[in-house]
Length: 394
Image (cartoon, rainbow, N blue to C red; front, top):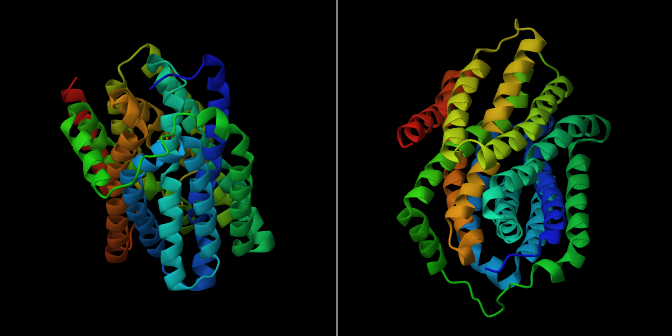
């Protein structure tokens, strides 16, 4: 694949950063304002895990099958599609009907999942391979940026105007930005192949490439553990804090402060991986830190000072919310040039397995034990094993 001119890198990075920010905002919104949704619709807290489990199933199939669509229509066009589908899914949630909730999770999860493979495909054409960890990490800071916006503004908007209005504002913003991306399509979608068609065998082909390459196979297992832990923590963090004495607004503010730390954290890990330390060693350290921070979160209770809870939250942020750029860059570098979007999607599909299995496991533990903490500890165990394995394979 022919690299883009160097002067396109900042433009591409800016566009993909904003795209990921809106995607992150829309994906995290149901979790951030979950207390209001649960109270209004008379749902049980375990509903959160079920909702995000369904989004993970939709994302799994979407990421495995998106490669041909990226090649045919272009990465920028598929970025626009991802934004519009997420907007539709978020808007559907406002109906409040149980069947519509399932449809919302499928549309939002499947649509949003395409955003990362598309941005990986586009940015890998603009950046030298040795700097991909840094470039991808900068782009991936958009995820905590979106979470930060959600944590600060969503609870306030929900108190003022209701959770449905908050959802609809988010949906409208995603559509508006998708339209704003249109002028860039001629610049960045010039590599598309209009004759490329989608086949069901594309799922198998993508899996074969991932599983046949040891480096990609190891990254897939890491992605499974990392994404699962991140999904559980993101989905339950705000609700958990409300059970130990925090108001929804205070819990959302704590969440936003913690997430803000992931922005410099991601850049730091990307810079270290690009210049100083092997990405595998960095990921091993993040794995162990992730497992340890999950245990500390489980130990938090109403007697802990807010400062200590904030420090634990920041540790979670720089581990469970800061691994993406390093892992995605490794996946892109290990992929064939003409399959970077699709193969990255294949690696991420394993992450969706984690995002499906761990929230469901957490929901089951919560229903069985009534304890939020036990679930956090159990969901950190896969990251512990991945960290040990990565250190052994150095």
